[in-house]
Length: 356
Image (cartoon, rainbow, N blue to C red; front, top):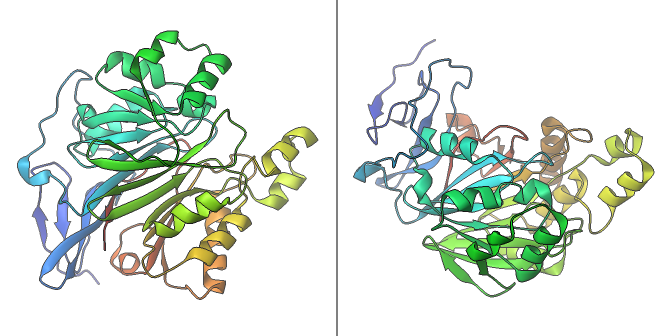
């Protein structure tokens, strides 16, 4: 039976609404909110109906979008969007509506622009590109992006930059945009404090990132073959986690890959399988952990359902059965933890990450 609803326009943006208590909206983008004491706070923004055919407003690549004053994110939140996650390309946005950074640059900048604009964020909000390592699926569009946006720096370790120049046909002029960073030394970009930390992978130099702003904390490790002490250290501090769940061990073992490639993927400096990711998350789970984003899923050796099922079971075995799917429905958004497999080729919804 249909329920009466109240939908109030918010942010003066098409398709964005406040949804309270009973909700349903015929829109493909909605801000989901809940009451905490006397306040209404947003948990995240999701796509309610991804099949909706009505086009979003278009903006030219050189157009500076004007974001209404009341659309600015409150200080105790961060926005997170993945533009694609997998060996075909990796890139995500972490920041506010005013400013933020890209983590990696393996996705075409035009797709980034379109996705940000669809979520009410201007491309000019990007103040830095933070690279995790020098593999092509993470750096392919780095120079292309900063060449067109020269005020945006590339943040990575000197070894990562050297690896990019050695491995790929990238203009040496990329050095003009390089802002050297060093692991375990915090740096500040776009109102964020970021700390690069060591991860185990087979790039020239490999970093995860621990990101904080006004009490919001997020740890990101996109490619890693094992859980090292530094990964453990930063993941335990984070309220929001983006971590690899690359393959299902049985699918990899029985799949078509060569023995060499199978061994490389399963090596301690290769990629994480679903079971190991699940065991680790179960070990570090605490009431403060709010969102887990599974990233870099293999197209041939994994599926989103397999990854989520494996990790969910590990969490349930550890005593956490109150798991949501990140869809933002009334039922799901009240769950203790949200578990989401990020799309391989498509952009995700925009998630609002809170401090408490």
